Amino acid sequence: MSEQPRITLGGSAVVFEPGETLLDVARRNGVEIPTLCHDPRLKPAGACRTCLVEIEGWQRLAPACATRAQAGMVVASENERIDRHRKSLLALYMTDHPQTDERAETGTPNQLLAMAEAFAAPSDWGRLPQKRAGRPEDRNPYIHYEAETCILCARCTRYCDEIESVSAITLAGRGSETTISTADELSLLDTTCEMCGGCIDVCPTGAMSEKMPLALEARPDRALGKVRTTCNYCGVGCQLDLNVDRAGEGGRGRIVKVTSPEPGTTSNDGNLCVKGRFAYEFVHHGDRLTKPLVRGKDGELRETSWEDALQVAAEGLMGVRERHGADGLGFVSSSRCTVEENYLVQKLARVVFGTNNVHQCAAT
Ligand code: SF4
Ligand code: SF4
Ligand code: FES
Image (cartoon, rainbow, N blue to C red; front, side, top):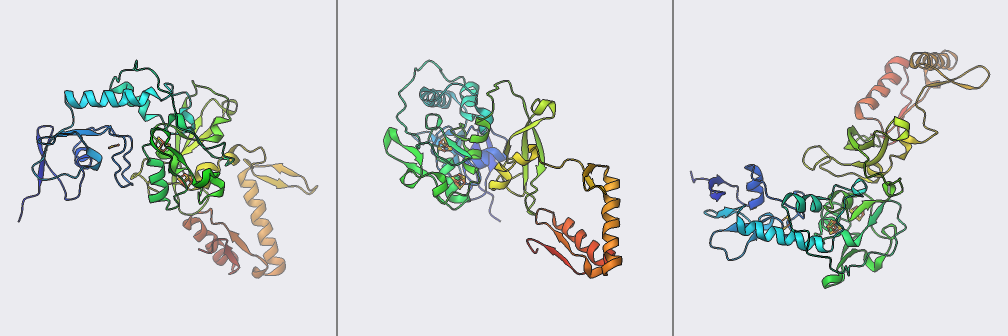
């Protein structure tokens, strides 16, 4: 049996699987290498160069995310040369990048700012004029692109292409004028964009952000808490994180945005659709029913307890069955329910009331 191939990483011999990148091997062995353009769901692009490592015998530093491990490689992920390069790189990024994190709640946390601080990148390199043009104000209701915060890591365009398979956004222009745009600078509404918001979720600098939180009062002190829940729009059961401003809505808490959990941790692998990510306003809508209501003899709806409401519903259904027979009843369930809930509805119709008049809008 042939021995599994090895590399030396930070002085220790570690095995690797054929096809693994140096970053894969490092992460599997608990060795931290910073990244910005890397996403485990996407093909490596080697665009941001924050993951540079030194390989013995190689003249240049190499991006760990885009370099495949080869047997016998001797790799350093930390040394004075790497640190110098990383600091210079981050300082250069910061020369045309806003230095504040005040809009973090409109997208993902700004990983570039956090990294520049963590690696003590020089902050006195001045400011270079920003030549990157944004798209003309896009009338789509959800996604905002801020050209001056973009570092052209192409995570958003690769996500749109490789995961969503729609390629609604692309790198456009040349040289220092390169930007993220759409064909003919159209509004996202006039492209193949599905408004999944994945481009916001993968952006490491907040250049892609949500429009809805932008409309909220700016509150840099806002402390957002995350509440993990299951999307209730369909039976797929995507996991999502409600980002809640606990002081909002008079202390009852207000959802400020919805994000997806880390890729690889839940069945939706970090992906959401337009409904799961953006259609959360109904939670705070004034017309939303939050308590059971029962119509009295005078025709008016009145608040009541769940026990009372269920009793009234059961009596009403039994009354219809007595007067018209079981097939006088019909049960309609929803594709927003889980498979188990839909199963229970058909059980209720067939076993408790004795009718096969049961339907569910997705017919699953
Ligand atoms: S919302 Fe989704 S489909 Fe639209 S541009 Fe972003 S990644 Fe592409
Ligand atoms: S918008 Fe964000 S994800 Fe897209 S290229 Fe710019 S920095 Fe990268
Ligand atoms: S993370 Fe490797 S080059 Fe960007």
